[in-house]
Image (cartoon, rainbow, N blue to C red; front, side, top):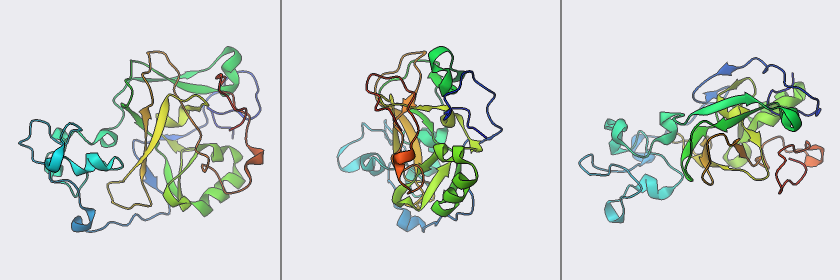
Length: 247
C-alpha cells in the first residue's frame, strides 16, 4: 500500500490515507526498554520554590542540569517529577500543543499527497510535535520494507542504528509531514523517560519562525531506512530552491 504523504509514482491526485492507528506516544514492538535504577537515572534537583521551575533561564550552580544537557527532558529521576505540571522542561511529554492542520496537496504539489501546515504562528525553537510510531529492531525494519517498500519512507533511525521508529501503520500527525530540502523543522533526539540511551524520543522543533499556513517540512534522516545502497532513493518533490533532487 502506498503511504499517503510521500508518493513514489508521481501520479496526479490525492487518495485517501492508508489505514493507520493514531497514537500519542511510541509503542515498543518486540523491543524491551532497559530501565535503570533511579540513582542511575540521575536527573535534576530543582526546587519547586523557584520562581522559574526547571526553565532555561535558571543558570549557575543551581540551574536545571537536564536543561543544560540539551538532550534530556526532566523525567522520573528528577525532583520535579513530584510536580510535573510545574516543570518547564517536559515539552514532548505534554504532547502536541500547537494547532497543526493535515491537508491534501493540490496542483503542482499533488504528487506529494498529504502534508501538514501550521494553524498558528510558531516561534523559532518551539516544540511542534514528536515523531511517533512503533519502535522496532533494524532487522524487523528490513523485513517490513521488503514486504511493503512504502513503509521504509516512515522509518526514523534512533541512536546507534539498532532500533528505528516505524510510523507507517502506527503514527501521529508527524507522519504526514513531508521531507524538505529547505526544512523549517529540526528533529532532535531526546532521552526517553525509561533512561535507555538506545531508545531516545524524536521531537520536531521550529528551525525558524513559521507563519500560519506555512507547510511544515524536515530534512530526511540519511540513516532513516535500511543500510542498503541509497542509489535507489526517491525523487524529491519539495519544490524548494535548494532542492537536491532526491531524498
